[in-house]
Amino acid sequence: MGGSKFTKEARLFFSTSNQLVSPFKDARKIKGIAGELSRVARNHAQFGSIVSSSTLNQTRILSNVSGSYMSTDMVIGRDGDRDKMVSSLLDSSAAAGVLPVASFVGIGGVGKTTLAQYVYNDERIKTYFDLQLWVSATQDFNVKDVLQQMVTCATDDEKALDCGIDQLQRRLYPKITRKRFLLVLDGVWDDDSLRAKWLELRALLRAGAQGSKVLLTTRSKTVARIIGTQDPLIVGDLGDDDSLLLFQYVAATEWHEPGVEAIAKEIAKMCPKVPLVIRAIGSLLAGKHTVQEWRAFRNAQLANFASYGSDVIGTLKLSYDQLGTRLKLCLVYCSLFPKGFRFEKTTLVRLWIAMGYVEAEYTDQNPEEVGEGYVLCLLSRGFFYCNNMDGHKCPDSFQMHNLMHDLVLSIAGYKYKMADSNTNEFDERVCHVSFHIENYSDWEVPSSLLKLKQLKSLLLPLPSYGLKSLN
Image 1 (cartoon, rainbow, N blue to C red):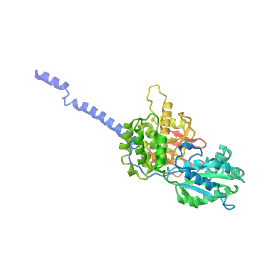
Image 2 (tube, rainbow, N blue to C red):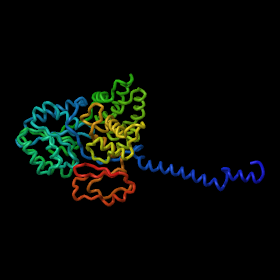
Image 3 (spheres, rainbow, N blue to C red):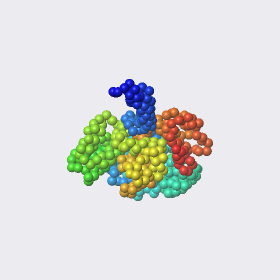
């Protein structure tokens, strides 16, 4: 700042110390920082609860949907329960006119459906019964839905989906009349009108021949009694040896380093003895190859495992926490669909792409291919399942396991809303809404939906076409 007075004033004017110019420069910087902080806040408001959520809310449990096919390789430690149930179903001592009902009862994820599939596909059962029917029950035990599945199973004709209840009864009656059948009702829940609905269905089922049986799976002993089971078979946890065998079956690969086996035994002992949980954690660890990775998982992830107790959802969240941010977003978006929903790969991937959740790793990568890779990853982690997987090829359709769906619902929180015809009000913070309507004729979109300022996606049902996305 040497020189004359004029020189000093000129240098001061063009310097950063100029009291007139400096505030404008600082204001621009502060405005830029504020804009960046606002963007971070918006992203956290939209995705933060999904990406970093650590709390689990009590979730509404919906219906169970599954299929009759299974692979016996995955059934470990259930031969005794299978043989007991097979003997019960083959027992012909019931009085004339009585339709005996047998039941598997147990907590979610313990393997009731798998055990029912094991029985259903037993050669002794196939030889004894003239007809076998598998029904995945809805939460409210909708009789029409039960009849639709029975007719489809008996006739292999999906046109039953378009029939009324009277037509369904007329189509089913000749198929079961004087036939010795086995009907599996998988995943029946307690309902105020369950007894009345069961009596309505049972009246039709009595057309079957002497020796016909019903096999029920449920989480509730009360449901088993309502349907008519006197002595349900309680499905308990696996024993220590069987748990270890199942864990090794799922988690072991030829690429693991020596020493992993010892840590696997420790982890298997720490896991709840629930088959679904064991499969989920085993699938997660199958991708870890080194002793260091396995030891880190044991020490960090399972250090407080005992605190989960019987909270299976909390245990399953271990698998969720290992997913990348975009996979978490894709998975939680599935909370907009009901439990047991059969996802079509192409439709689901396009929804993910439309929401901006799919990001290519390479410049020439097709978004559909990336989304397909996401599906395969979620399949391998046990979030989705498909009974007829063709090697490593991505299936065209798949489902989400019940407990995984409960987990996703607990994470989704208020930002995702699955609505029905009785939904009239919405939380103003909702970002994604899907409607699931049975009667389309007199249904209108609620006016309260127009008040949602943060709404980013809306899934509306169309007759015969399922859900349509309006983004």
